[in-house]
Length: 206
Image (cartoon, rainbow, N blue to C red):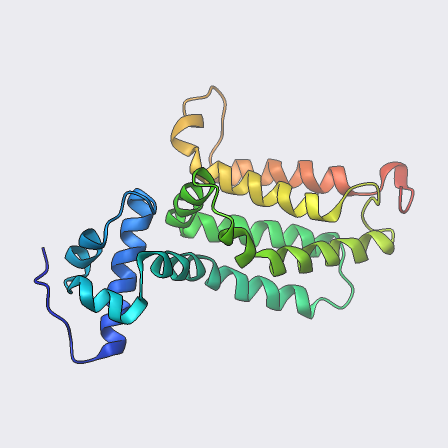
């Protein structure tokens, strides 16, 4: 256990506390982590945590922001730069999210805790990203490049939910007969989603 002492560098202290909070919230979720746990893990006093962050709830919000921030910035930049969005942009967006979770499986675990706790603020963090993604799909539908009889927001929800669940439940479905590895799942998932969203019978906007 770290000794509960601070550091003269406030930024360094904040990072220690945030790193500790990230680890504990990923492992246990929000409800099971106490301020004492946070103090012991970060090696600072509870009063110092209150000084820097105010409350456990405030730390929880910052941890969730940190978890999604790296992915969101890159995805938003890609979506905003797309001048003529089409199927390839959707394909790349799905793969980007999948690779992000593959490289950061702890984020999928953190999301599982938020879902179990019916955490509403988490959905607000990525609402703008979902809105922008759905708008790009809607633009592709308008150009006849994707079928127009599906709700763009549901398309985003579908691929986010399926990719997230894949990493959350790997230990479970790894025992199912015939289930492949990450690469096989991604390849099949892209085939199913992209094939299902292309205009049917070669008719634009169908």
